[in-house]
Length: 291
Image (cartoon, rainbow, N blue to C red; front, side, top):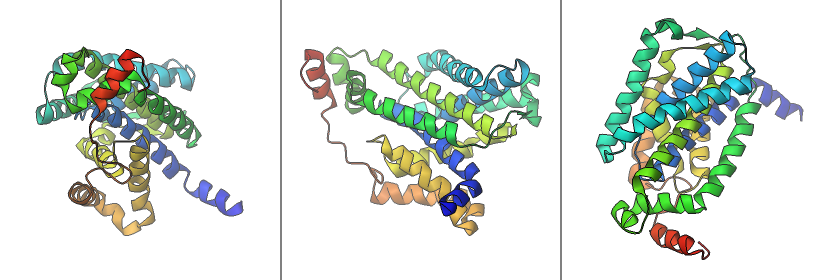
């Protein structure tokens, strides 16, 4: 017990970062399961984080209220962003959503309310990883249930063949927007937790480097199961801490990991090769038969 207590006390911040990165990766897992390669998650994370700090600092509302409000704001912003952007496909969608993230960072750097380039101080910071891990457990369970529901089956059908999905009565645009908004909600929630963890928040935390890290986490762990993003985020967040010499080469390490996984195990560590069947399962669910 003393050993575990000592490890916990020495690595509280690292454990909290693992939980937050896992939540952020799960937000990408949602959109990838609908066939959307969107890289806007870090932008929504920034919105949720800054909103939570501003509410907590200026209105002194409880942390839970500020966290919820920041998450909802990120989801609301996702609606007008998603309506035009989700008409794009593939690399064009990825580029457009990267652009959205850069717009968010530029706004944070120039708006007086966000401290411009100086960032914001969070006087109510708490290093405890418990909020992150409790939230992670809830989100994992919720997504596990959603992916097995008719909604998850519709997303799988769209991912496999959206033309066939539309021909079978699935409202592709509505389901894609729903995945995008849900991903933004989870990312905003992760941003609020991240802001609460640190005594200081600034735009440098939401640059393109973090976007690529989240993509690496998702690809490394695999996106065919909710456990994949969790494992990918946990290993790659903790690895530089335990291999001290690698901390200065984290970006290069992430790039190498991404390359090796794509070449040798494209389905990820705990993933499995998708063999179709999403549309068939949705049809069965629509008829009321066991999916």
